[in-house]
Image (tube, each protein chain N blue to C red):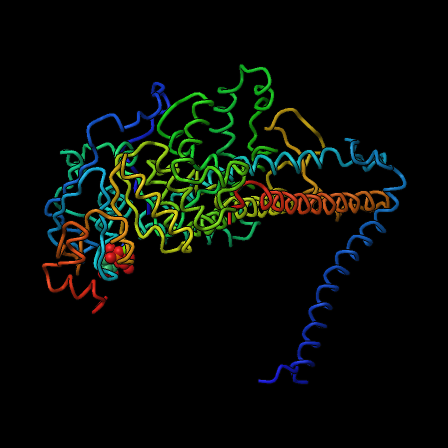
Length: 316
Length: 277
Ligand SMILES: Nc1ncnc2c1ncn2[C@@H]1O[C@H](COP(=O)(O)OP(=O)(O)OP(=O)(O)O)[C@@H](O)[C@H]1O
Ligand SMILES: [Mg+2]
Protein backbone atom coordinates (compact mmCIF):
# COMPACT_ATOMS: atom_id res chain seq x y z
CA UNK A 1 0.00 0.00 0.00
CA UNK A 2 1.22 3.44 -0.83
CA UNK A 3 2.19 5.72 2.02
CA UNK A 4 0.55 8.62 0.33
CA UNK A 5 -2.80 9.73 1.65
CA UNK A 6 -5.57 8.87 -0.70
CA UNK A 7 -7.78 11.82 -1.37
CA UNK A 8 -10.77 9.91 -0.03
CA UNK A 9 -9.15 9.51 3.33
CA UNK A 10 -8.08 13.11 3.24
CA UNK A 11 -11.52 14.54 2.70
CA UNK A 12 -12.99 12.06 5.15
CA UNK A 13 -10.50 13.07 7.79
CA UNK A 14 -11.01 16.74 7.19
CA UNK A 15 -14.77 16.37 7.39
CA UNK A 16 -14.62 14.30 10.52
CA UNK A 17 -12.12 16.64 12.11
CA UNK A 18 -14.25 19.63 11.24
CA UNK A 19 -17.38 18.05 12.62
CA UNK A 20 -15.64 17.16 15.88
CA UNK A 21 -14.28 20.67 16.32
CA UNK A 22 -17.68 22.12 15.53
CA UNK A 23 -19.42 19.89 18.06
CA UNK A 24 -16.89 20.78 20.74
CA UNK A 25 -17.21 24.46 19.94
CA UNK A 26 -20.98 24.17 20.15
CA UNK A 27 -20.75 22.79 23.69
CA UNK A 28 -18.49 25.61 24.79
CA UNK A 29 -20.75 28.12 23.09
CA UNK A 30 -23.76 26.67 24.85
CA UNK A 31 -22.10 26.97 28.25
CA UNK A 32 -21.00 30.51 27.54
CA UNK A 33 -24.47 31.35 26.28
CA UNK A 34 -26.21 30.01 29.35
CA UNK A 35 -23.78 31.85 31.56
CA UNK A 36 -24.19 35.22 29.84
CA UNK A 37 -27.95 34.83 29.73
CA UNK A 38 -28.05 34.11 33.45
CA UNK A 39 -25.89 37.15 34.13
CA UNK A 40 -27.99 39.34 31.88
CA UNK A 41 -31.27 38.39 33.52
CA UNK A 42 -29.93 38.69 37.02
CA UNK A 43 -28.20 41.98 36.35
CA UNK A 44 -30.81 43.98 38.26
CA UNK A 45 -30.34 41.85 41.32
CA UNK A 46 -26.56 41.81 40.98
CA UNK A 47 -26.39 45.61 40.82
CA UNK A 48 -28.94 46.06 43.59
CA UNK A 49 -27.43 43.74 46.18
CA UNK A 50 -23.81 43.33 45.10
CA UNK A 51 -21.79 40.52 46.69
CA UNK A 52 -23.99 40.82 49.81
CA UNK A 53 -26.45 38.63 47.94
CA UNK A 54 -24.27 35.61 48.70
CA UNK A 55 -24.32 35.89 52.47
CA UNK A 56 -27.54 37.73 53.14
CA UNK A 57 -30.16 35.52 54.69
CA UNK A 58 -33.01 37.86 53.82
CA UNK A 59 -35.70 36.73 51.43
CA UNK A 60 -38.59 39.08 51.45
CA UNK A 61 -40.54 39.70 48.28
CA UNK A 62 -42.61 42.34 50.04
CA UNK A 63 -39.72 44.59 51.04
CA UNK A 64 -37.64 43.55 48.06
CA UNK A 65 -34.78 42.11 50.12
CA UNK A 66 -33.14 39.02 48.67
CA UNK A 67 -30.12 36.89 49.59
CA UNK A 68 -28.88 33.44 48.71
CA UNK A 69 -27.57 32.36 52.11
CA UNK A 70 -30.44 30.15 53.21
CA UNK A 71 -30.74 28.48 49.83
CA UNK A 72 -27.01 27.89 49.69
CA UNK A 73 -27.02 26.49 53.20
CA UNK A 74 -29.91 24.17 52.38
CA UNK A 75 -28.27 23.04 49.17
CA UNK A 76 -25.01 22.19 50.88
CA UNK A 77 -26.60 20.69 53.97
CA UNK A 78 -28.88 18.35 52.02
CA UNK A 79 -26.10 17.38 49.63
CA UNK A 80 -23.70 16.62 52.46
CA UNK A 81 -26.32 14.55 54.30
CA UNK A 82 -27.06 12.69 51.08
CA UNK A 83 -23.41 11.87 50.46
CA UNK A 84 -22.60 11.03 54.07
CA UNK A 85 -25.40 8.50 54.06
CA UNK A 86 -25.17 7.25 50.47
CA UNK A 87 -21.43 6.85 49.96
CA UNK A 88 -20.64 4.37 52.76
CA UNK A 89 -23.85 2.49 52.05
CA UNK A 90 -23.14 2.17 48.37
CA UNK A 91 -19.57 1.05 49.11
CA UNK A 92 -20.95 -1.75 51.24
CA UNK A 93 -23.66 -2.70 48.77
CA UNK A 94 -21.11 -2.75 45.95
CA UNK A 95 -18.79 -4.93 48.01
CA UNK A 96 -21.68 -7.25 48.75
CA UNK A 97 -22.64 -7.49 45.11
CA UNK A 98 -19.13 -8.07 43.80
CA UNK A 99 -17.54 -10.19 46.52
CA UNK A 100 -20.04 -11.69 48.89
CA UNK A 101 -23.41 -12.30 47.30
CA UNK A 102 -24.08 -15.48 45.41
CA UNK A 103 -24.33 -14.66 41.69
CA UNK A 104 -27.94 -15.76 41.73
CA UNK A 105 -28.66 -13.07 44.30
CA UNK A 106 -26.29 -10.43 42.95
CA UNK A 107 -27.99 -10.36 39.56
CA UNK A 108 -31.50 -9.49 40.71
CA UNK A 109 -30.23 -7.03 43.33
CA UNK A 110 -28.14 -5.30 40.69
CA UNK A 111 -31.19 -5.08 38.47
CA UNK A 112 -33.29 -3.68 41.26
CA UNK A 113 -30.73 -0.97 41.87
CA UNK A 114 -30.84 0.03 38.25
CA UNK A 115 -34.62 0.26 38.44
CA UNK A 116 -34.31 2.53 41.49
CA UNK A 117 -32.12 4.81 39.40
CA UNK A 118 -34.74 5.00 36.69
CA UNK A 119 -37.65 6.04 38.92
CA UNK A 120 -38.59 9.67 38.15
CA UNK A 121 -37.74 12.04 40.94
CA UNK A 122 -41.32 13.21 41.36
CA UNK A 123 -42.17 9.71 42.56
CA UNK A 124 -39.48 9.97 45.19
CA UNK A 125 -40.92 13.32 46.18
CA UNK A 126 -44.45 11.99 46.57
CA UNK A 127 -43.31 8.92 48.38
CA UNK A 128 -41.11 11.11 50.55
CA UNK A 129 -43.99 13.38 51.49
CA UNK A 130 -46.70 10.81 52.05
CA UNK A 131 -44.83 7.79 53.36
CA UNK A 132 -41.29 8.62 54.36
CA UNK A 133 -41.94 11.94 56.14
CA UNK A 134 -44.59 10.61 58.54
CA UNK A 135 -42.42 7.62 59.28
CA UNK A 136 -39.46 9.87 60.04
CA UNK A 137 -41.59 12.07 62.26
CA UNK A 138 -43.00 9.15 64.22
CA UNK A 139 -39.95 6.93 64.56
CA UNK A 140 -36.61 8.18 63.35
CA UNK A 141 -36.59 11.74 64.58
CA UNK A 142 -37.66 10.96 68.16
CA UNK A 143 -34.98 8.29 68.26
CA UNK A 144 -32.33 10.69 66.99
CA UNK A 145 -33.42 13.29 69.50
CA UNK A 146 -33.23 10.77 72.31
CA UNK A 147 -29.82 9.65 71.13
CA UNK A 148 -28.18 13.05 70.68
CA UNK A 149 -30.41 15.24 72.82
CA UNK A 150 -28.06 15.49 75.77
CA UNK A 151 -24.95 16.23 73.75
CA UNK A 152 -24.32 20.00 73.49
CA UNK A 153 -23.51 20.39 69.79
CA UNK A 154 -25.20 17.41 68.25
CA UNK A 155 -28.25 18.00 70.41
CA UNK A 156 -29.03 21.25 68.63
CA UNK A 157 -28.82 19.50 65.26
CA UNK A 158 -31.56 17.09 66.26
CA UNK A 159 -33.91 19.32 68.21
CA UNK A 160 -37.30 20.85 67.57
CA UNK A 161 -40.62 19.37 66.60
CA UNK A 162 -40.29 16.27 64.43
CA UNK A 163 -42.41 17.12 61.45
CA UNK A 164 -40.88 14.77 58.99
CA UNK A 165 -40.27 17.71 56.70
CA UNK A 166 -37.07 19.73 56.51
CA UNK A 167 -33.37 19.57 55.79
CA UNK A 168 -32.79 16.09 57.20
CA UNK A 169 -35.69 14.40 55.41
CA UNK A 170 -34.68 16.11 52.17
CA UNK A 171 -31.11 14.93 52.65
CA UNK A 172 -32.26 11.38 53.30
CA UNK A 173 -34.51 11.33 50.25
CA UNK A 174 -31.59 12.62 48.23
CA UNK A 175 -29.41 9.87 49.68
CA UNK A 176 -31.92 7.33 48.47
CA UNK A 177 -31.97 8.89 45.02
CA UNK A 178 -28.19 9.12 44.79
CA UNK A 179 -27.61 5.61 46.11
CA UNK A 180 -28.41 3.67 42.92
CA UNK A 181 -26.04 5.80 40.87
CA UNK A 182 -23.11 5.67 43.24
CA UNK A 183 -23.69 1.96 43.87
CA UNK A 184 -23.80 1.11 40.18
CA UNK A 185 -20.57 3.00 39.53
CA UNK A 186 -18.82 1.46 42.52
CA UNK A 187 -19.98 -2.03 41.61
CA UNK A 188 -18.48 -1.61 38.16
CA UNK A 189 -15.29 -0.16 39.62
CA UNK A 190 -14.84 -3.09 41.99
CA UNK A 191 -15.65 -5.51 39.21
CA UNK A 192 -12.57 -4.23 37.40
CA UNK A 193 -10.12 -5.12 40.17
CA UNK A 194 -8.05 -7.99 38.76
CA UNK A 195 -8.77 -11.35 40.33
CA UNK A 196 -5.11 -12.06 40.83
CA UNK A 197 -4.69 -8.86 42.84
CA UNK A 198 -7.45 -9.90 45.22
CA UNK A 199 -5.98 -13.38 45.46
CA UNK A 200 -2.61 -11.90 46.18
CA UNK A 201 -3.99 -9.79 49.00
CA UNK A 202 -5.92 -12.73 50.42
CA UNK A 203 -2.77 -14.81 50.01
CA UNK A 204 -0.96 -12.40 52.33
CA UNK A 205 -3.49 -13.28 55.02
CA UNK A 206 -6.05 -10.51 54.49
CA UNK A 207 -9.69 -11.09 55.34
CA UNK A 208 -12.39 -10.25 52.81
CA UNK A 209 -12.83 -6.89 54.51
CA UNK A 210 -9.09 -6.19 54.47
CA UNK A 211 -8.82 -7.07 50.80
CA UNK A 212 -11.65 -4.64 50.19
CA UNK A 213 -10.27 -1.82 52.30
CA UNK A 214 -6.58 -2.15 51.56
CA UNK A 215 -6.54 -3.17 47.93
CA UNK A 216 -9.86 -2.83 46.15
CA UNK A 217 -10.67 0.69 47.34
CA UNK A 218 -7.20 2.10 46.61
CA UNK A 219 -7.12 0.31 43.27
CA UNK A 220 -10.45 1.76 42.23
CA UNK A 221 -10.21 5.13 43.91
CA UNK A 222 -10.30 7.09 40.68
CA UNK A 223 -13.53 5.47 39.64
CA UNK A 224 -14.88 5.79 43.17
CA UNK A 225 -14.24 9.51 43.19
CA UNK A 226 -16.00 9.68 39.86
CA UNK A 227 -18.96 7.88 41.37
CA UNK A 228 -19.07 10.24 44.33
CA UNK A 229 -19.02 13.26 42.05
CA UNK A 230 -21.79 11.75 39.99
CA UNK A 231 -23.84 11.45 43.17
CA UNK A 232 -22.90 14.95 44.21
CA UNK A 233 -23.94 16.54 40.95
CA UNK A 234 -27.21 14.67 41.06
CA UNK A 235 -27.89 15.69 44.66
CA UNK A 236 -26.97 19.32 44.29
CA UNK A 237 -29.38 20.09 41.48
CA UNK A 238 -32.21 17.73 42.37
CA UNK A 239 -35.42 19.68 42.43
CA UNK A 240 -38.70 17.84 42.54
CA UNK A 241 -38.17 15.42 45.39
CA UNK A 242 -36.55 18.08 47.55
CA UNK A 243 -39.27 20.60 46.91
CA UNK A 244 -41.78 18.10 48.23
CA UNK A 245 -40.14 17.42 51.56
CA UNK A 246 -37.90 20.35 52.50
CA UNK A 247 -40.65 22.70 53.69
CA UNK A 248 -39.60 25.63 51.49
CA UNK A 249 -38.75 28.10 54.22
CA UNK A 250 -36.10 30.74 53.78
CA UNK A 251 -34.20 30.30 56.99
CA UNK A 252 -31.10 28.78 58.43
CA UNK A 253 -31.96 26.84 61.55
CA UNK A 254 -29.53 24.99 63.75
CA UNK A 255 -31.74 21.95 63.75
CA UNK A 256 -31.73 19.53 60.84
CA UNK A 257 -35.38 18.84 61.63
CA UNK A 258 -36.29 22.41 60.68
CA UNK A 259 -37.66 23.21 57.27
CA UNK A 260 -35.47 25.04 54.82
CA UNK A 261 -34.90 25.34 51.11
CA UNK A 262 -32.35 24.71 48.41
CA UNK A 263 -31.57 26.76 45.36
CA UNK A 264 -33.29 24.30 43.10
CA UNK A 265 -36.38 24.00 45.27
CA UNK A 266 -36.70 27.77 45.58
CA UNK A 267 -36.53 28.20 41.85
CA UNK A 268 -39.13 25.51 41.26
CA UNK A 269 -41.38 26.91 43.93
CA UNK A 270 -41.27 30.62 43.36
CA UNK A 271 -40.70 31.27 39.68
CA UNK A 272 -44.39 31.34 38.95
CA UNK A 273 -45.12 33.78 41.77
CA UNK A 274 -42.35 36.21 40.94
CA UNK A 275 -44.17 39.18 39.49
CA UNK A 276 -41.79 41.91 40.44
CA UNK A 277 -38.68 42.37 38.21
CA UNK A 278 -36.30 42.46 41.17
CA UNK A 279 -37.80 39.26 42.59
CA UNK A 280 -37.43 37.53 39.23
CA UNK A 281 -33.92 38.84 38.84
CA UNK A 282 -32.97 37.56 42.29
CA UNK A 283 -34.29 34.12 41.38
CA UNK A 284 -32.22 34.10 38.22
CA UNK A 285 -29.19 35.11 40.26
CA UNK A 286 -29.85 32.10 42.50
CA UNK A 287 -29.72 30.01 39.34
CA UNK A 288 -26.47 31.69 38.41
CA UNK A 289 -25.04 30.81 41.83
CA UNK A 290 -26.06 27.16 41.36
CA UNK A 291 -24.47 27.17 37.92
CA UNK A 292 -21.19 28.54 39.28
CA UNK A 293 -21.21 26.17 42.27
CA UNK A 294 -21.69 23.09 40.07
CA UNK A 295 -19.01 24.37 37.76
CA UNK A 296 -16.60 24.76 40.68
CA UNK A 297 -17.39 21.25 41.86
CA UNK A 298 -16.64 19.90 38.41
CA UNK A 299 -13.30 21.69 38.37
CA UNK A 300 -12.52 20.46 41.87
CA UNK A 301 -13.37 16.93 40.80
CA UNK A 302 -11.03 17.12 37.84
CA UNK A 303 -8.21 18.53 39.95
CA UNK A 304 -8.70 15.81 42.52
CA UNK A 305 -8.56 13.13 39.86
CA UNK A 306 -5.42 14.63 38.40
CA UNK A 307 -3.79 14.67 41.81
CA UNK A 308 -4.72 11.03 42.32
CA UNK A 309 -3.16 10.15 39.00
CA UNK A 310 0.09 11.88 39.92
CA UNK A 311 0.32 10.72 43.52
CA UNK A 312 1.68 7.51 44.97
CA UNK A 313 -0.14 4.44 43.75
CA UNK A 314 -1.72 5.69 40.58
CA UNK A 315 -4.37 2.97 40.65
CA UNK A 316 -4.78 1.96 37.08
CA UNK B 1 -16.02 -14.27 44.74
CA UNK B 2 -14.33 -13.94 48.06
CA UNK B 3 -16.11 -15.96 50.65
CA UNK B 4 -16.57 -14.66 54.14
CA UNK B 5 -13.88 -15.97 56.37
CA UNK B 6 -14.66 -16.94 59.87
CA UNK B 7 -11.24 -16.11 61.20
CA UNK B 8 -10.80 -12.44 61.81
CA UNK B 9 -7.98 -10.11 62.62
CA UNK B 10 -9.32 -9.03 65.99
CA UNK B 11 -8.74 -5.31 66.47
CA UNK B 12 -8.32 -5.89 70.14
CA UNK B 13 -5.65 -8.53 69.80
CA UNK B 14 -2.70 -7.88 72.07
CA UNK B 15 0.39 -6.55 70.31
CA UNK B 16 2.25 -9.40 68.74
CA UNK B 17 5.95 -9.09 68.24
CA UNK B 18 7.38 -9.33 64.76
CA UNK B 19 8.06 -12.64 63.09
CA UNK B 20 10.92 -14.66 64.39
CA UNK B 21 13.47 -15.77 61.83
CA UNK B 22 13.14 -19.46 61.20
CA UNK B 23 16.83 -19.95 60.45
CA UNK B 24 17.74 -21.15 63.89
CA UNK B 25 15.03 -23.77 64.14
CA UNK B 26 15.47 -27.24 62.71
CA UNK B 27 14.48 -27.46 59.08
CA UNK B 28 10.80 -26.62 58.81
CA UNK B 29 8.51 -26.25 55.85
CA UNK B 30 8.21 -29.87 54.78
CA UNK B 31 5.04 -30.56 52.84
CA UNK B 32 3.46 -33.93 52.35
CA UNK B 33 0.56 -34.26 49.94
CA UNK B 34 -1.61 -37.33 50.31
CA UNK B 35 -4.31 -38.48 48.00
CA UNK B 36 -5.29 -35.05 46.78
CA UNK B 37 -8.30 -34.79 44.48
CA UNK B 38 -9.48 -31.43 43.26
CA UNK B 39 -12.78 -30.35 41.71
CA UNK B 40 -13.98 -27.27 39.86
CA UNK B 41 -17.67 -27.80 40.47
CA UNK B 42 -18.31 -31.30 39.17
CA UNK B 43 -15.19 -31.29 37.05
CA UNK B 44 -12.30 -33.18 38.63
CA UNK B 45 -8.87 -31.92 37.61
CA UNK B 46 -6.49 -33.48 40.16
CA UNK B 47 -6.44 -37.21 40.77
CA UNK B 48 -4.82 -38.78 43.82
CA UNK B 49 -1.83 -36.48 43.96
CA UNK B 50 0.88 -37.53 46.40
CA UNK B 51 4.08 -35.59 46.87
CA UNK B 52 6.77 -35.13 49.50
CA UNK B 53 8.32 -31.71 49.32
CA UNK B 54 11.62 -31.46 51.12
CA UNK B 55 12.20 -28.55 53.47
CA UNK B 56 14.56 -25.81 52.28
CA UNK B 57 14.86 -27.21 48.82
CA UNK B 58 13.50 -26.02 45.52
CA UNK B 59 10.88 -28.28 44.03
CA UNK B 60 9.84 -27.60 40.46
CA UNK B 61 6.47 -28.56 39.04
CA UNK B 62 6.42 -29.04 35.30
CA UNK B 63 3.89 -30.31 32.82
CA UNK B 64 1.86 -29.23 29.81
CA UNK B 65 -0.64 -26.41 29.98
CA UNK B 66 -3.84 -27.31 31.76
CA UNK B 67 -2.42 -30.34 33.56
CA UNK B 68 -3.23 -28.90 36.98
CA UNK B 69 0.03 -27.36 38.21
CA UNK B 70 -1.52 -24.13 39.39
CA UNK B 71 -4.51 -25.92 40.82
CA UNK B 72 -2.19 -28.17 42.80
CA UNK B 73 -0.19 -25.47 44.52
CA UNK B 74 -3.26 -23.33 45.11
CA UNK B 75 -4.34 -25.98 47.57
CA UNK B 76 -1.31 -25.43 49.79
CA UNK B 77 -2.39 -21.97 50.96
CA UNK B 78 -6.07 -22.75 50.44
CA UNK B 79 -6.47 -19.77 48.17
CA UNK B 80 -8.90 -21.83 46.10
CA UNK B 81 -11.37 -21.42 48.96
CA UNK B 82 -12.07 -17.90 47.75
CA UNK B 83 -14.28 -19.55 45.14
CA UNK B 84 -17.31 -21.37 46.38
CA UNK B 85 -17.44 -23.99 43.63
CA UNK B 86 -13.89 -25.24 44.18
CA UNK B 87 -13.16 -28.02 46.62
CA UNK B 88 -10.70 -30.77 47.28
CA UNK B 89 -10.28 -33.95 49.28
CA UNK B 90 -7.17 -35.51 50.68
CA UNK B 91 -4.46 -34.20 52.96
CA UNK B 92 -1.72 -31.65 52.75
CA UNK B 93 0.57 -31.83 55.75
CA UNK B 94 2.80 -28.94 56.67
CA UNK B 95 5.37 -30.31 59.12
CA UNK B 96 2.92 -33.02 60.01
CA UNK B 97 -0.11 -30.81 60.50
CA UNK B 98 -2.99 -31.20 58.06
CA UNK B 99 -3.51 -27.74 56.70
CA UNK B 100 -6.79 -28.69 55.06
CA UNK B 101 -8.35 -29.28 58.47
CA UNK B 102 -11.23 -26.89 59.16
CA UNK B 103 -9.63 -25.77 62.41
CA UNK B 104 -6.58 -24.32 60.69
CA UNK B 105 -6.22 -20.55 61.05
CA UNK B 106 -6.22 -19.42 57.43
CA UNK B 107 -4.54 -16.14 58.18
CA UNK B 108 -1.63 -17.74 59.98
CA UNK B 109 -1.45 -20.42 57.28
CA UNK B 110 -1.06 -17.73 54.64
CA UNK B 111 1.63 -16.05 56.65
CA UNK B 112 3.56 -19.30 56.78
CA UNK B 113 2.99 -20.09 53.12
CA UNK B 114 3.52 -17.17 50.76
CA UNK B 115 2.48 -17.07 47.12
CA UNK B 116 3.89 -15.35 44.04
CA UNK B 117 1.73 -15.16 40.94
CA UNK B 118 2.40 -15.27 37.24
CA UNK B 119 1.68 -11.57 36.82
CA UNK B 120 3.29 -9.28 39.38
CA UNK B 121 0.70 -8.04 41.85
CA UNK B 122 1.98 -4.86 43.46
CA UNK B 123 -0.77 -3.36 45.59
CA UNK B 124 -1.87 0.18 44.72
CA UNK B 125 0.30 1.78 47.38
CA UNK B 126 3.91 2.83 47.85
CA UNK B 127 6.87 0.45 47.62
CA UNK B 128 7.32 0.74 51.37
CA UNK B 129 3.66 0.06 52.14
CA UNK B 130 3.70 -2.92 49.81
CA UNK B 131 6.48 -4.56 51.76
CA UNK B 132 5.07 -3.48 55.09
CA UNK B 133 1.66 -4.85 54.13
CA UNK B 134 1.90 -8.29 55.72
CA UNK B 135 3.85 -6.98 58.69
CA UNK B 136 1.10 -4.50 59.48
CA UNK B 137 -1.51 -7.17 58.96
CA UNK B 138 -0.01 -9.77 61.21
CA UNK B 139 1.99 -7.85 63.78
CA UNK B 140 2.12 -4.72 65.83
CA UNK B 141 5.56 -3.17 65.94
CA UNK B 142 7.27 0.18 66.37
CA UNK B 143 7.87 2.24 63.24
CA UNK B 144 11.61 1.85 63.41
CA UNK B 145 11.36 -1.92 63.52
CA UNK B 146 8.90 -1.86 60.65
CA UNK B 147 11.31 0.22 58.58
CA UNK B 148 14.16 -2.15 59.42
CA UNK B 149 12.18 -5.18 58.42
CA UNK B 150 11.05 -3.56 55.18
CA UNK B 151 14.67 -2.78 54.35
CA UNK B 152 15.79 -6.31 55.18
CA UNK B 153 13.03 -7.83 53.06
CA UNK B 154 13.94 -5.61 50.12
CA UNK B 155 17.59 -6.59 50.52
CA UNK B 156 16.60 -10.26 50.68
CA UNK B 157 14.67 -9.80 47.44
CA UNK B 158 17.69 -8.08 45.84
CA UNK B 159 15.66 -4.96 45.26
CA UNK B 160 16.89 -2.55 47.91
CA UNK B 161 19.54 -0.85 45.79
CA UNK B 162 17.07 -0.19 43.02
CA UNK B 163 14.28 1.25 45.16
CA UNK B 164 16.02 2.84 48.14
CA UNK B 165 15.26 6.29 46.71
CA UNK B 166 11.78 5.33 45.59
CA UNK B 167 10.34 3.86 48.75
CA UNK B 168 7.48 6.30 48.69
CA UNK B 169 6.76 6.00 45.01
CA UNK B 170 3.96 3.81 43.84
CA UNK B 171 4.82 0.13 43.49
CA UNK B 172 3.12 0.25 40.11
CA UNK B 173 5.80 2.56 38.74
CA UNK B 174 8.45 -0.18 38.94
CA UNK B 175 9.41 -2.35 35.99
CA UNK B 176 7.81 -5.77 35.64
CA UNK B 177 10.83 -7.59 37.02
CA UNK B 178 11.13 -5.14 39.90
CA UNK B 179 7.43 -5.52 40.64
CA UNK B 180 7.85 -9.27 40.87
CA UNK B 181 10.78 -8.89 43.28
CA UNK B 182 8.68 -6.40 45.23
CA UNK B 183 6.05 -9.10 45.61
CA UNK B 184 8.75 -11.52 46.73
CA UNK B 185 9.98 -8.97 49.28
CA UNK B 186 6.43 -8.51 50.49
CA UNK B 187 6.06 -12.25 50.94
CA UNK B 188 9.46 -12.61 52.62
CA UNK B 189 8.82 -9.83 55.10
CA UNK B 190 6.55 -12.00 57.23
CA UNK B 191 9.16 -14.81 57.36
CA UNK B 192 7.18 -17.57 55.69
CA UNK B 193 8.38 -21.15 55.79
CA UNK B 194 7.20 -21.94 52.28
CA UNK B 195 7.10 -19.85 49.13
CA UNK B 196 4.83 -20.94 46.29
CA UNK B 197 5.72 -19.48 42.91
CA UNK B 198 3.39 -19.95 39.95
CA UNK B 199 5.43 -19.24 36.82
CA UNK B 200 7.00 -16.21 38.50
CA UNK B 201 9.19 -15.27 35.53
CA UNK B 202 6.82 -15.78 32.64
CA UNK B 203 5.99 -12.07 32.53
CA UNK B 204 9.55 -10.91 33.20
CA UNK B 205 12.38 -10.13 30.76
CA UNK B 206 15.56 -12.30 30.66
CA UNK B 207 17.60 -10.03 32.94
CA UNK B 208 14.80 -9.91 35.48
CA UNK B 209 14.38 -13.67 35.16
CA UNK B 210 18.06 -14.24 35.92
CA UNK B 211 17.76 -12.09 39.02
CA UNK B 212 14.74 -13.99 40.27
CA UNK B 213 16.42 -17.34 39.62
CA UNK B 214 19.47 -16.21 41.55
CA UNK B 215 17.15 -15.13 44.33
CA UNK B 216 15.46 -18.51 44.43
CA UNK B 217 18.81 -20.25 44.76
CA UNK B 218 19.72 -18.01 47.66
CA UNK B 219 16.36 -18.17 49.42
CA UNK B 220 16.27 -21.94 49.72
CA UNK B 221 18.76 -21.65 52.54
CA UNK B 222 15.93 -20.40 54.69
CA UNK B 223 12.68 -21.61 53.19
CA UNK B 224 11.00 -24.22 51.08
CA UNK B 225 10.26 -23.19 47.52
CA UNK B 226 7.76 -24.75 45.16
CA UNK B 227 7.96 -23.31 41.68
CA UNK B 228 5.71 -24.00 38.74
CA UNK B 229 7.47 -23.42 35.45
CA UNK B 230 6.97 -23.98 31.77
CA UNK B 231 10.65 -23.54 31.18
CA UNK B 232 12.50 -26.85 31.43
CA UNK B 233 15.90 -25.16 31.50
CA UNK B 234 14.72 -23.09 34.41
CA UNK B 235 13.57 -26.16 36.30
CA UNK B 236 16.89 -27.84 35.61
CA UNK B 237 18.86 -24.76 36.64
CA UNK B 238 17.26 -23.94 39.94
CA UNK B 239 15.43 -26.94 41.36
CA UNK B 240 16.56 -29.83 43.49
CA UNK B 241 13.50 -31.96 42.84
CA UNK B 242 11.04 -32.00 40.01
CA UNK B 243 7.50 -33.29 39.72
CA UNK B 244 6.04 -33.96 36.29
CA UNK B 245 2.28 -33.52 36.03
CA UNK B 246 0.08 -34.83 33.26
CA UNK B 247 -3.69 -34.58 33.14
CA UNK B 248 -4.01 -33.99 36.86
CA UNK B 249 -1.75 -36.89 37.89
CA UNK B 250 1.81 -36.85 39.09
CA UNK B 251 3.58 -39.04 36.57
CA UNK B 252 7.06 -38.82 37.97
CA UNK B 253 8.74 -37.15 40.89
CA UNK B 254 12.37 -37.22 41.90
CA UNK B 255 15.77 -35.64 41.92
CA UNK B 256 15.89 -33.00 39.19
CA UNK B 257 19.10 -34.23 37.55
CA UNK B 258 17.84 -37.80 37.62
CA UNK B 259 14.48 -36.87 36.16
CA UNK B 260 15.96 -34.84 33.36
CA UNK B 261 18.79 -37.20 32.44
CA UNK B 262 17.23 -40.51 33.18
CA UNK B 263 13.43 -40.34 33.29
CA UNK B 264 11.72 -43.55 34.30
CA UNK B 265 8.41 -42.93 32.63
CA UNK B 266 8.09 -42.75 28.88
CA UNK B 267 5.69 -39.79 29.12
CA UNK B 268 8.17 -37.81 31.15
CA UNK B 269 10.81 -38.46 28.55
CA UNK B 270 8.51 -37.38 25.76
CA UNK B 271 7.70 -34.18 27.59
CA UNK B 272 11.22 -33.14 28.50
CA UNK B 273 12.53 -33.92 25.08
CA UNK B 274 9.82 -31.71 23.68
CA UNK B 275 7.80 -34.36 21.95
CA UNK B 276 4.56 -32.92 23.28
CA UNK B 277 3.19 -30.13 25.44
N1 LIG C 1 -11.60 -21.57 37.63
C1 LIG C 1 -11.69 -22.73 36.94
N2 LIG C 1 -12.89 -23.25 36.70
C2 LIG C 1 -13.01 -24.41 36.00
N3 LIG C 1 -11.97 -25.10 35.53
C3 LIG C 1 -10.74 -24.63 35.73
C4 LIG C 1 -10.54 -23.39 36.44
N4 LIG C 1 -9.22 -23.15 36.48
C5 LIG C 1 -8.62 -24.16 35.84
N5 LIG C 1 -9.53 -25.04 35.39
C6 LIG C 1 -9.24 -26.28 34.65
O1 LIG C 1 -8.44 -27.09 35.47
C7 LIG C 1 -7.43 -27.70 34.73
C8 LIG C 1 -6.09 -27.39 35.35
O2 LIG C 1 -5.86 -26.01 35.27
P1 LIG C 1 -4.55 -25.33 35.86
O3 LIG C 1 -4.72 -23.87 35.75
O4 LIG C 1 -4.28 -25.89 37.20
O5 LIG C 1 -3.46 -25.83 34.84
P2 LIG C 1 -1.92 -25.43 34.74
O6 LIG C 1 -1.16 -26.69 34.73
O7 LIG C 1 -1.56 -24.45 35.77
O8 LIG C 1 -1.88 -24.78 33.31
P3 LIG C 1 -0.95 -23.59 32.78
O9 LIG C 1 0.38 -24.17 32.55
O10 LIG C 1 -1.61 -23.18 31.51
O11 LIG C 1 -0.96 -22.53 33.82
C9 LIG C 1 -7.56 -27.21 33.32
O12 LIG C 1 -8.21 -28.21 32.58
C10 LIG C 1 -8.41 -25.99 33.42
O13 LIG C 1 -9.23 -25.89 32.30
MG1 LIG D 1 -0.98 -22.38 35.75
